[in-house]
Amino acid sequence: MSGVASLFSDEFYRLARRHLAPGGVLVQWFQLYEIDVTLVASMMRALAQNFPDYAVYAATDSDILVVAGEAPTLARPLADVFRALPGVGSELRKVHVQTIGDIELRRLGGKTVLHPLFLSYNVPANSDYHPYIDLNAARHRFLQTGAGELTRLGAAGVPVTEILERRPRSGRPASLDGDDYLERIEKARRATYARDFLLGAVRPEPRGIPSQLQRDLELARMRGIDCVDPRKSDLWIRSATNIARAVNAALPPAEAAAVWRAFEAAPCAELLGTPERRWLDLFAAVAERDAPGMARLAGELLADARAQTPAVRHYLLTAALAGLIAERRYDAALQAWNAHARGIAVDLDVRLLYAYLAVARRLNVPLD
Image (tube, one colour):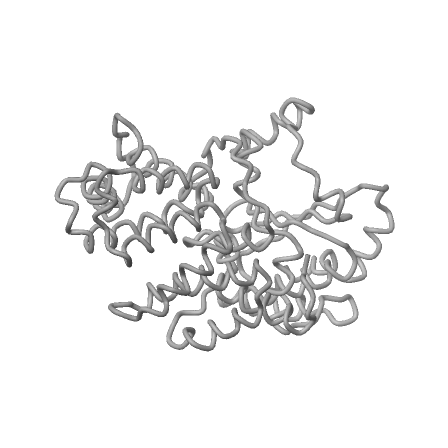
């Protein structure tokens, strides 16, 4: 980045916006290799000072594309560029973008939900007069650091950005082409396999499916859907938890919710105890992006600390915070954080939720 950092400065973005036509947008590539998240944050802060809105898309695990413009422009549904502009569609197919669903799958979030995350790094906006990127890029190149974790935002089991933005994916089909270059696509491919394995009459071929996920799918279907010895619910509910992490964030809401409806409709569902039933209800709420349900059910499960591992508490706290913040119950979200955050790993999803909460409580107004 050193040497081209002036293309990502406050002054550049001010000039760029001045030369845009009404309704026009700036589209800019930014690398995620040989840098860290603080440099991305510095660039995004400069961008945010000059554009009312932006959206960030993952091109690969090492590259993002930023689209900046007026909020009404970016709020429009994505047009079918493959029909309207065949030449552009042809170029997109060369980089594994075959459908509008492929573009939706790559969306990381917009300014409303991402800007608090970037503010949390407490770095200055990049400027020609205070060149934060230029002064720090060489160190990260030498250390071979990267900011690829940004491309995994909202993909770890709870779709936090979709929930906070209240913008679930439309469900337009994705080709799943390009899974070698972007982990989000590979996760969507595995989630599609899991859905078909659990719901289909003919089980799909397990190509490239991790052995643990395959075992979880087989056990959960046998016990929870086919009702073979279903009273051993403690075992298959654990498998269902792993399936929820694999499926709920990677599929559109309607497709993910269908998985949990199959468990609820099974004859053996009535044999489940209250805690197990609560877990299935939580998985369904996350799948449907049902913020009130997530807040209530995750809160109830967090209150029952029996046999909860740090990983389980992490999942429950992420779901609880996302639900409470989306409902604008900021004080309740802070109480949940103070009660349950000790000892959990603060990954980028949790950092985003806490940063969003901090900004919302300080301003005491909704961020959207």
